[in-house]
Length: 277
Image (cartoon, rainbow, N blue to C red; front, side, top):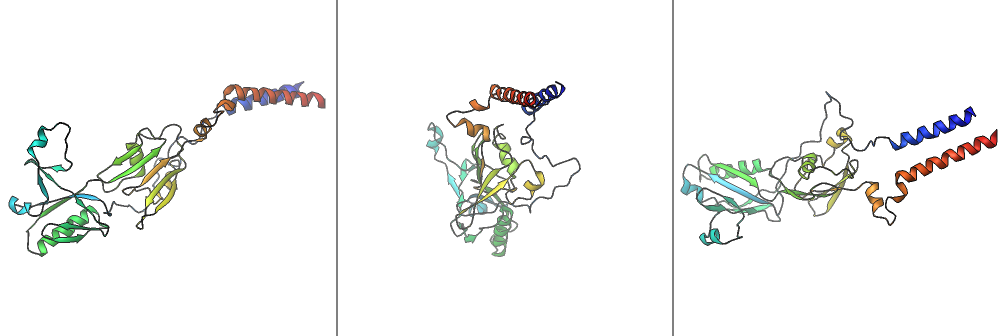
C-alpha cells in the first residue's frame, strides 16, 4: 500500500511540475551578469554600396560658391498648391531641395565641378574628408565643410515581430538589437535562439547567418551583430505556432490532454504495483 501511494505521489508531482515549468528560451542574454565584459565583433560601420543614395552638401563662406557644388532643384510653386503631391529630398531654408547622389554599380558618383568620384566602400566621414581634400587640393574652395547623410539606408525585419517591414536608419552603426527594437521587439511566439540574418555579398549573392538572443557573448561575436544596409532579419515562429498550421492545431496538447496522460500513467503504475504484490 505504501509503495502504491508513493508511486501515485511521484506521478502527480511529476505531472504538476511539468505543467508549471518555466520556459528557458524567452529571457534575453541569459549569460550576462553584472560586471561582465562582453567583447563584440569588430565594430562594423555602414559603408557606401552601389545603389545607395546620398545627400552631400558643401558649405563655404560664399553662398554663390557653395551653390556650384550642390545639386539644388528649385521647387515648382504649383506643387505647394497641389493636394497629395510631395517631392522627396532635403529641403533648405530658401525653399529649394537638394537632390540625392545615386552610387553607380562601380561605386562612383558624378560630383559637380570635380567630376567622377569613387566613394564605394567608404564610410560617410571618409566621403566627407575625400571631397574636402579634392576641393582644397584643386584650389576650388578654402576650408569647405562637407556634410554627408544617408538617404535610403535600411534593413528588413520579417517574421514574429510586432511591426515587420523595411526600417530606414541614418546611423553609422546599427546593432541587430537596435533593428529588432525598431520593429517593436519579438512576439512571445518568436524563436529567440535561432534568428536568421541574410547579408548581401559584393557579387550579389546572400550569405546566411544564425544568431541567438539568449547568449550575449555569442551574439556579440557574430559578424551580423553590426548590421549593414539591406540586411534581412527573419524571426521564425516557435513550435507552438507551427503546430497551429496543421489541421489538428493545438488540440493534442491542451491541458485536458496532459491530464488524461497523467491519469493514464497513474492507472498503469497502480496496476503494475498491484500485479507485482
